[in-house]
Length: 308
Ligand code: UDP
Ligand code: MG
Image 1: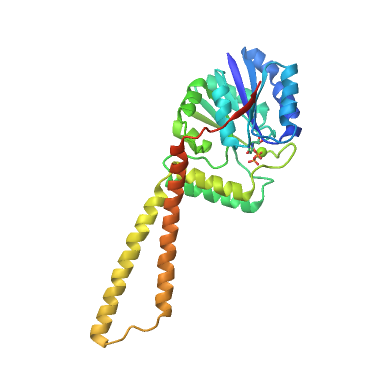
Image 2: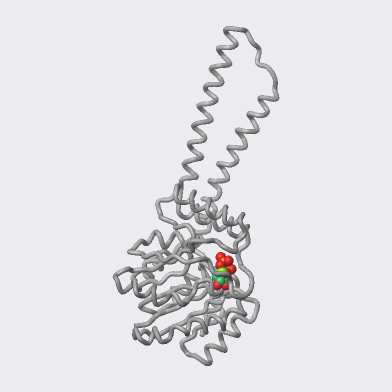
């Protein structure tokens, strides 16, 4: 049996070796289980020494593979590429920064043996993260789970161990706009959740700033929910109803009290409000259209520069 480990890396030169060493601490366990190892570093267009270090590992240890992209395509593309290349009967994805502790592997494996198809992890604390980011992250998961039928677990990491069947399920979803957390939920299968405390990055800095995460959350919403479109239609109906009531009130007022319509400030406010809501709704529509546009172009999800 073969276990494939996929690690997406973007400018992670300091983490390449420490990760390898940490992973190899599981060697006795793997040997005990009769599992062979395949380690795939997906270099997502790094501009530092990441690829060179993986190359040197590959020379020493043939089980280490390198897949380099022609530029930075994002972590989602890295995961997809890794899953495509993985030959393993079991596949696990981990971050190279050691935030996904390889020492959990034996425990994760024990659940596969109990009949689970996939073992996922979630962090129960967000220690070491800016409070504003934690707040918005929680808000995102709350909203997302309200508006989407696919379950997206708060604090879920991309650290997952899966059987070949689950991997094939994920690969069958060849969409361009990839939101992996949703894709995992969408494919289903029996999943065991393991919880652990947040671990801080071993070296370097996070590649996701607030703005990148915000855009990512919009990707997630458009990919796994159409509720915003429904909300904009409902808003249209509510505004029409308000207008009808206002018209009725004005007519009655005029007929009974001969009260001339007073003041344009109120009118300006109403026009601003309504046109604002209209633009907002067109914006929502635009987001879906933009995603559809990118999807129908059928561009490749990533381009390979080097493969070892
Ligand atoms: N990553 C990637 N491409 C990117 C950004 C990140 O392959 O464009 C990798 C990164 O090297 C790391 C993993 O994705 O192995 C998680 O990134 P990071 O640790 O920066 O995210 P965080 O843990 O802060 O959410
Ligand atoms: Mg990290």
